[in-house]
Image 1: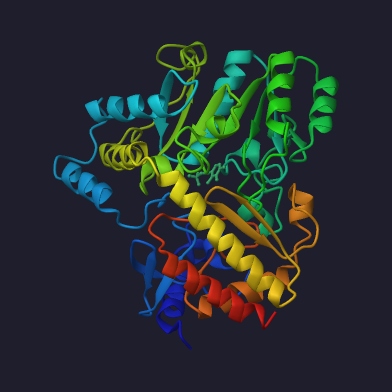
Image 2: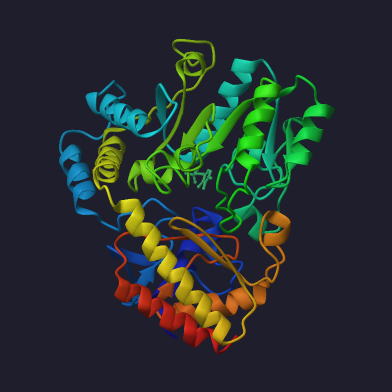
Length: 428
Ligand SMILES: *Cc1c(COP(=O)(O)O)cnc(C)c1O
């Protein structure tokens, strides 16, 4: 048994932490087996508690776009820590990172920092409701916006994996204010507007979906949402927690040239520390307390360590002119290699990719929404996952997840990965 120590640690963890994990997808429920405990990581590699080295395609679910323990980020955090870790008072670095984010992202005048993507999306919804004086929101099946009540109506990712799309504990009262549509389906949105005139505060969408595998918006989908929102005085919220600072400096707004009214961030913006943020033009952001009536707060919001990590990260992304091109090229190379390997062994599959987000679906049909993502063969995925793991390649332990490509990956790492896929494909 290779994972003796990890399994022993998991047994211990389960005695004091529900399911042994602090976030459900980590528990390997959908692929079987015990989760791997990580000891440390550097660049593109994880070093686990059993002494193995793994090539990492999760990268903390997105944040480590430049690789683990990236030196400028580590240095920024260490030097800040020596000067005190939290004050509950304003600090200059909060303005510095806010200014940089506003410079990088189109259409935002002000930004507020919180501690997670969940908090960012939850706050964005409250702000949209406060601004429009309306109560209902629309979300798309399979899009994930964190675990706040309004979104656990039929979430993707963890909730799907666990077969509890409607979590107990979410009240009927909350559920009735969240309307659902299929991703890439504008007709359903139009129907929802017609059935709920002047009632919809906001549409929240992953502008490139990443929590049911990677699903690109069809041509005209985001533009269609924009124009329907304009027509109905509804705010369009782009949840760029995953895509922000990953697909382009300015996220999907820049990539697809479609403007959102409110944008949420997480993951990359914190450089691996717990950070989320939401941003909009002045007219909307000025509704927030203490300027306006919409309440939102946080004891550790704008925490100096988190801001230092985030600022170091965004500074690197902002100054590295070729970063997104390099990431795109590496991911395209991997895409091509995996495709050839799977084809050679006649493994039915569909690969979706946008920039440095890529997902392999064991399904014949094009994957365009949650329903088509759910057609993937989970038994094949399990074999694929465990086969790759045995070869030292660590992908997300769920068929509904995207692989996150980091700039720390070398072409040699990519070739190692493609060879592993080739080997595993022959057993599928
Ligand atoms: C990860 C994610 C969230 C939730 O962020 P947390 O930091 O895990 O709370 C929200 N939206 C999207 C699109 C995400 O990928």
